[in-house]
Amino acid sequence: MEMTAVTEAPSTLSDLYEKSLRVVTEGQLVKGRIIAMSPQDVVVDIGFKSEGTINRSEFSDPNSLAVGDEVEVLVEKVEDEQGMVILSKYKADRQKGWDRIVTMCKEGDTIEGRPTRKVKGGLMVDIGIEAFMPASLASFKGYANLDSLVGQTLKFIILKISRARKNIVVSHRDYLLREKDQQRQKLIESLTVGERRSGTVKNLTDFGAFVDLGGLDGLLHIGDISWGRIGHPSDILKVGQPLDVLILSVDRQTNKVSLGLKQLLPSPWQHAEEKYPAGQRVKGKVVNLVPYGAFVEVEPGIEGLVHISELSWSKRVNHPSELLQVSQEIEAVVLAVDAKNQRLSLGMRQAAGDPWQTAAEKYLPMTKVVGRVRQLTDYGVFIELEDGLEGLLHNADISWTRKINHPSEVLKKGRMVDVVVLTCDPASHRITLGMKQLMDDPWSQLVQQFSLGAMVEGIVTKVAGFGLFVEIAKDVEGLMHLSELELGATERLEDRYRVGSKVRAQVIKLDELERKIGLSNKNLPPEPSPAAS
Image 1 (tube, rainbow, N blue to C red):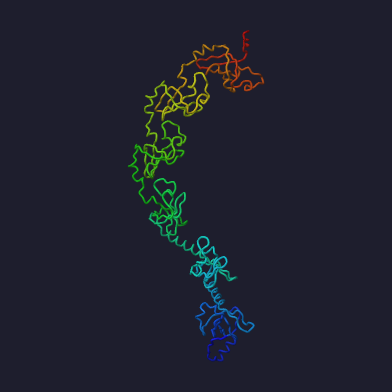
Image 2 (image 1 turned 180 degrees about the vertical axis):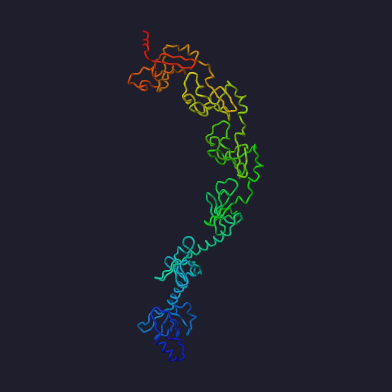
């Protein structure tokens, strides 16, 4: 091997003495001088009894080396089989880098480095020494293209320093997140409530839109997008759309920002009191039905409430859906407006006019009318005479002779019936009706037809705990009290008598004033035998 040597000046006796006393140990960092070089190796004198040889590849820039240069190397072995000392420039640099890192840096610090090569599971990064970066920590989301990062100068966060194993784990992802968080913090500190900011629609949800303000997302609630009612933010906005918004609130503890879009435009309530004075008729669209009423949009951004009590003059409305449906166009009258609290009260029945104002002249007592059965109750029937007007037909006014326990026994909902007006009280919004009054009272004839002691035959219409109701003529019932029934000592009433069965009886009571007929089947005379043919 041909070497390029350097001629040194003769050493003094003291220099030779000091060199001969130099103690070198394995693992020690020492300074030496290049005394010879070949295309493959560099010979370094460290002042020991023998020189060491280092492969040129261990130097970062081998072409710049020259005889006489001072280098720092690590003693791997004091003496090999040939008596040469084993040196390493690479390990010396690694050791110096390690000492520098552990002295100057700690876990969590930011450090600059350059990915040098791709390995299984990640990248090796030169930060003065080689550190490992897992592939999952190379970017914000998922796994980055690791090959594209090799050779780039990047910044990292030191995640772990293992002194025992002399290895370091770093993360570029954590650095990016830290930078983003710092930018977000600076941005949120700069925000002022009431200021106008530019942003970009980042995401749309059912409850609103997230707007990127330049590193910080703010929430634009669906209620703050438009003064008018919208079904979904996508009705007005789209992802990627540039947008000017107003800062409504800033919570620097949670980094939450509320934004407004409609607030950049004048509120439609600004002149509502002048535009919608009480008594004015308006048209609108039903936008929501709730148990207590209907919300009606009279213009974008202004909704009025028609309370359930203002839907009809006389109809008993249990829910607005009985009369209205969403999207239906209606006409109403303004009852009151409160622009400050954004409240508009509407009345739908007022727009149709109050039918009770002319009811007294239209529904005089004993006037025959036709109506529709609207509701059946235990005590009677509500009959709709016209839109907004109902009358009550009491059970007692359905039949002269029949006891009505429930109107469903003779009437059905939706049926058209003839009735007569008994009373009309517009002040109380009450009309009473009668059905039996359409015919003459039959009791004067019944008294003659069914005299006391008369024998009758009828059909059981009802079995009660106190006796039987028996129809002895069309719509004419008599009561056979339990005490007037022929019944065995251990015999039960419901076992002996059934609805629809025929019974013989004797009239024992005939009260024209109370309109009651009493019957008995005790001690009846024997039924006459049929005449012989």
